[in-house]
Image 1 (tube, helix red, strand yellow):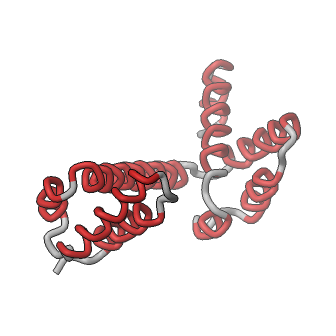
Image 2 (cartoon, rainbow, N blue to C red):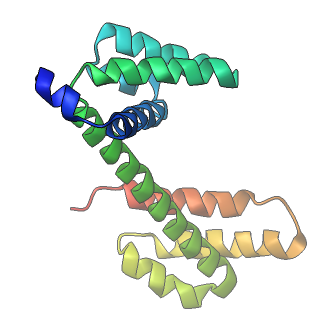
Length: 167
């Protein structure tokens, strides 16, 4: 932007832009420290974000985020917005897949062999006998009120199947 553009922007528009940059800073705080370092941020901005991650006092955190927004104003924030969008999409996808696995596990425990074909349709390379055994043990634990060790094992097995590459 040149000097004339800055004078033509309304105060309300500048406030909205600053609020958006502060929100971008809040979204960046959801990244791990390693992920922040991989974003190739200016050193001052990286330090400000890492400091903000450790601040718990509301007022101090608010001031730090104000500072982060000011620093973001000085750089091109579009690549950071893209990174935040990709991060949110990844989390949403992981959550959706997690819930699908939970539903498959619950169906196996509740319906037993009737739900086995549904699971095998999703994971054709699964070991049928192993699935039946884990589901039967999980159902027994549920019926007797024991801890859910077999249910967790069943879920872990489904997750392994999901993470297995398709050939």
